[in-house]
Image (cartoon, rainbow, N blue to C red):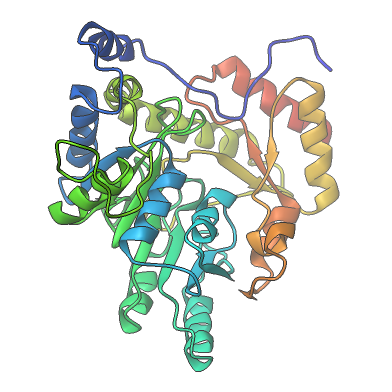
Length: 375
């Protein structure tokens, strides 16, 4: 392996602005899951979404999906339609709720849930007297899914949509920000995301009653009382005021972080444009992706692995595209509706280093390894 510094896939990128908000949490001694930073961070998110949703700051995006399950009343014996081509965190909360995931494959244009297969899955489950209780669909790698088509199918069968926008803060569909299109929507602020709070997430809801209920459930379901009174099972899901301070600083540089990642994608696309065996995920005309990760698809698994291993030999991190959930051992007994698209993308696809803190030298090094290998 090369002795040079490691080039990471997507590392945290601090601006320096975060420290003032973190210091405020310490100065006021509000380091618990309450305080000004939490309220401020939620307000920042709401403002970014043009005040079309209400935010609840939580300790992870996974917790946010679980809360959405609870607010929808999903429980043991229910079925939830899930995008197969995604990270496991999109699906695990279905199991937490005691429900069963049913997987739906992708369409080729955005790599996200296929509206055609979604409707086939719904019709199949209704025919078998198991109408799904929700649909979880993902803006994969920051690329907006086919919002209008998915929502049309969902409304036709009266099934709520949980919009997993964990990777898509700063992405837009028809001029509107991702995070407002589902009945419930979710963001992640994990260390590798477009902005980070170290660990954290947010649930976006459509009215204040839902926000109040989500805060109640995420704060151990404490009733209003002088003593600790509980009539429901709650969860310890609220974000720390310290971490929310990091989020406040990160929100101030979000637009610049999106611009940097989009520039990374354009650099790769331009520099590798002469290679006929590499293709990129293009934006539909109605979408703007934050390009959280820049992804390429090779002609074969062997070519994908050759490039990945060559990059690793130079201390450069890259990753295969997500392994579809319907291929994961833990979900081997779950029903799936597939067309082969996600399996093919997993076999041939690769995520290149995409952090907003990459230098031009870093990007050139990645490209030169690939060009040299092809030559």
